[in-house]
Image (cartoon, rainbow, N blue to C red; front, side):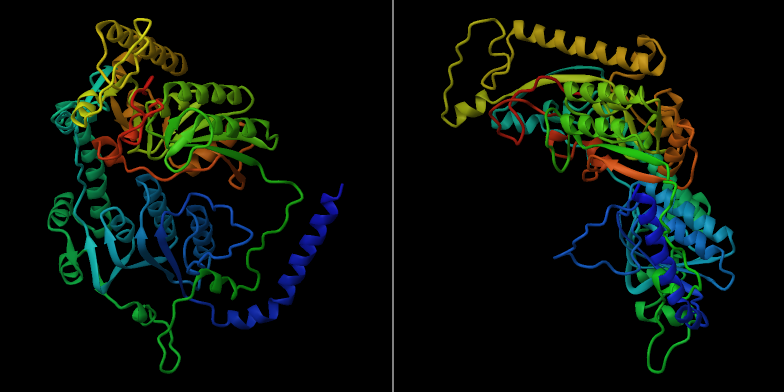
Length: 563
């Protein structure tokens, strides 16, 4: 009952503030900027993150910094309608975004250019990942002391088997699927052909996308673009000579370069978007709506999936994810749910817990799974509970398989003068002992467990994807796909971006809208490097969460099941 009067008062205040500021904006509007500056830095999210009410001790961000992909899109749409505006200056600094988000940024710039506006980009230093965004501009500028670290992509595959053997550690694993190569990190003395082929396929796709972006952005043929990559990295002078940039300009001279008027003895600054808004007679106002926007819930499954609650950094704890899913299901205003998966897998038990929770929510409202980086193994198991699975073109998808085992530190303990005697009652009582290898009886039990787990995984995927177990088996055995190849294999329904997924989820709920409220349940975790993940360069816990009381390498001495 109090909501309507409250909204009336708030909107009245906003309207009054708008009218009181009108004379000042009209005066400022006589010198409305013809260029507006944006700064792309770090990893801007798709949608704005909640802003803490108190920001004590936090360094204020540079005013031009882009806070989200969606916010940049709204700003560019407004600017594109201004006949007086010539274009934008895009400063790229320390940009590190996944492939899908980078393509979303490039698409926004392309739409802005299609409206007849110019984009001028500038940087001090860019790497291989950031250069395609810089090159999407009509004019590319670099600081005279700058660099273009354009060198292509590389992956370093690591195996620890020989090193473990030298120090007295033996890794004992059973797996289902020749392509389930995760245990090879611990068991093999050299990188397998299958692991090499997997890495090669992803490198080929990412390299092809890079070549296409450079060719399109700089007006080169694919052969010329490949030659540019092969000649990197570049100093500012060499980048200019090679045609990777169009000019070398100090930051202080950017305003002069764009033709802006300068005050006496001062360099003209390029105004930010906030400064531009102050020159509009009637800038956009966030009126309080009497009819609430449609709400879309986003639940994150980010990091290595582990049992229990809590979880931090690179872990997605099952209890925490299940709780977030329940909250999204109970939220009557949330008409649909996007399950944002960014996980290489983990505990099979925890993954199946999340799967069951996803299925329960999917009975109440549409659930669409989306992956823009990695959705493998247990991460994929969680995703199949959704009505549809969407993927970015070059995300890592699949790895349907299972492995299980333990580490035997017996020889290492002997070298250290530590002697253990294992006494047991029951053939498998010392199954998880870290002092010795599996006995033949224990090995048979291990193989049985792994086979049962693999068949269960196949059955779950087959039911979810509407295929037979044999059809899924042909696509499984640990095979890893890019998003594009996963769609061809029937493991993914559609290829698209985050905003497309959000709109589609609302359409499935029959509340189609481009203007919606997004609410996140559960916290997104730190990002994952796809190539490091595939090559095994990451910490061993990337592949396995082990459950034992004693730990030597930062993970348990024995594990029950790995996905």
